[in-house]
Length: 144
Image (spheres, rainbow, N blue to C red):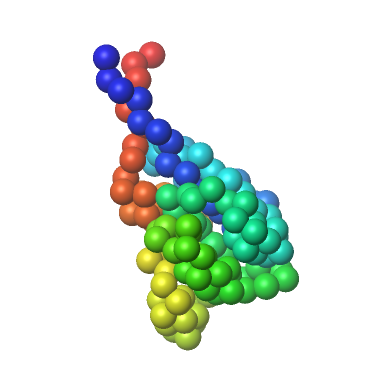
């Protein structure tokens, strides 16, 4: 009998409920065994990072343009946190700005993912980014 793998822990910092839903759909579409923890505001995420309330996830997905703060500030806080600094991080954004991309890379983002406008593109692009961040831990397919 095959040993079941632990779910990969992914923290999503995203204040748009529609994008949270689409990230969940991307996990399903790629058949990834991930436990997703969602922080729906800049303040909630920053407080959890600074207080040590986040149990070190394997990866973070951070929206660049949160309503009340910048995802780059969240990225900087994670890289400055001893227990979190080694986690893989993707910045998820609709921005195509070279300045935003360069800032994210300079602050330690592993990936910069531009949100495609079409559904299939979003599911594929975001699913592939999560696969890359987490080392591609897919669920074992089960018959039935």
